[in-house]
Image (cartoon, rainbow, N blue to C red):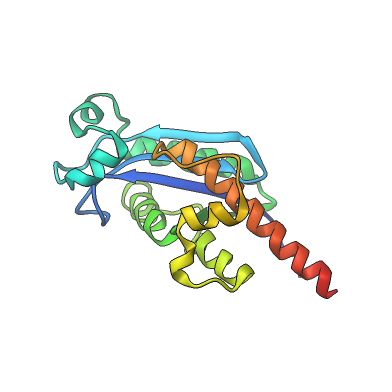
Length: 188
């Protein structure tokens, strides 16, 4: 059996609160881990008025402004799905990559299923924090982005703009993957 080629897609989201359905997905940023020029960014209309003020403060996003200029969730998710599928074609599998992937994944998965009926990433996600733990033997408390950045020295930083953060995460993923490849080569 031949495995499909894997396309790793770094995804970051900004939201109005901690859980999908109760709070809105406000923006999505994504890029091909191995070719950041292949990127996607979109802002969405909120699905309700629920918001954690701290979440909005961190992102700098406004529910009122997004209600006017954001894309309808169904159109946004269709556009995101089409973009992701265009990277994979028929011969590749998409792999969702996130930093604290369970959070980002929960919103993306919920929105794909609610608004389009299917998630092009399937039912799994790859978490950079967990991968880093496995690659380095670090503790969970040492998987904060500040700790990982101190160890790996990426050129980018996160700033709570979904596309910028997706590109930052892509760099972290490549650096962790290089650690794993180096360890594999040393063993083999």
